Image (cartoon, rainbow, N blue to C red; front, side, top):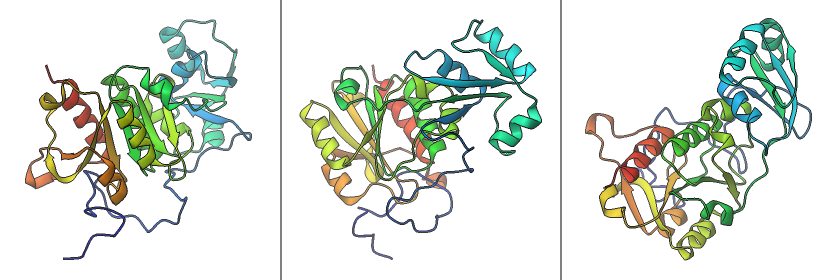
Amino acid sequence: MKPPHPNRGSGRPPFGGGPPRPPQRSGEFHRGPRAPEAPRGTVWLYGLHAVAAALANPQRRLRRLVLTEEAEQTLAARMPPPWPLPPERIERGRLDQMLGHSVAHQGAALLADPLATPSLQHALERPGPLIVLDQVSDPRNIGAILRSAAAFGAAAVVTQDRNAPEETGAMAKAASGALETVPLLRAVNIARTLIALKAAGLWVVGLDAGGGALAGGSLKERRVALVLGAEDEGLRRLTRETCDEVASLATRKVMQHLNVSAAAAVALYELTRAP
């Protein structure tokens, strides 16, 4: 049996599945499809849910709104005008060229500034558990985790600054509007952040294979920070050792590993279903 990597605890992914990825250099992360080009300091958000949520967010600085005729009608039904900025009509083929033919934009795109990164204190002032991501690098996974965080009332999501992607359209699309409502923090050092959360009274639970089954009932009197590791390698050794406890999901042997975003959703459900 191959020994675990010295910096990766058990060396097993928490519940993240899929084939292994090529080794990453320091500071490198998986970006998914090529991001559409945008002026420096801006990002293209796309998809009806992501665009509508950004238009409704007073903290978001908006630059340009482009819509197909069909998307404009759909957006107007969901969110009656006037909007913070006037839309530009565009043909779907032209929007495909702007954003990339692989982008599922639904005929709606919004050029905007990235959101300012909130402080940890701001996150602690919000109710609910916190989610800490230890080198989770796929923007679509982070977006899906934000969506689950919004659904289950999490206070914030924390990523590692060096090994997590910047805000992208793919992340916003996967978040389905949650990027505008759930604070997304960037921490320089995950272990130090966990220590700060402990000092603030949170119980830090690492989600990793080999721990006891996660039981929401036993945690109902505690405020929890839930820590999930990278898609392919799980929690790093120091992160694991800094947790108050390590827990796993009670899955059947035929399918023991879940994608990290799916694991986050199941774990949040387990935490919030406790009476």
